[in-house]
Image (cartoon, rainbow, N blue to C red; front, side):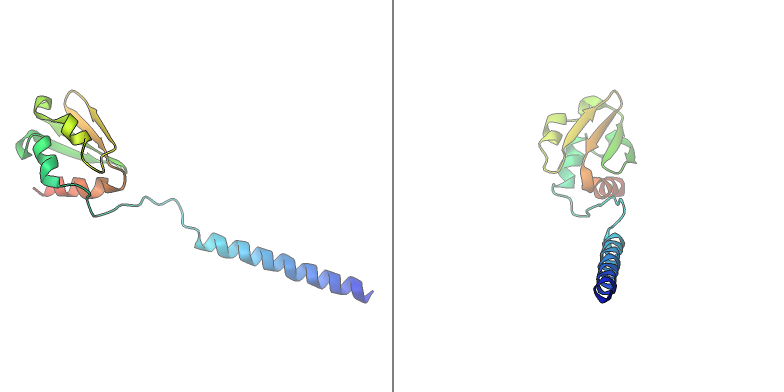
Length: 116
């Protein structure tokens, strides 16, 4: 009978210990978070030059991982040079805009483009 009680106590302690460890891990686990980095891996002046200078940019829309830049003249955009910039993983050229896939740099790039 004594062995039986000792076994129950050990299993109870073990069970609550495992539950406590699981709760602790859940508490530390972060929810779905979009990470953004403020440091841009390329020269923003170069990007502005490749977009056809400041007067060619009409509007900038920011998404979590990309920015859409609406322009006056798409022919002024140097898409090949933009693709070669470090940190830009994709370029989509449309009739009146260009979308740049930047990942965690999108907020910082949009902020810099809007400032000037």
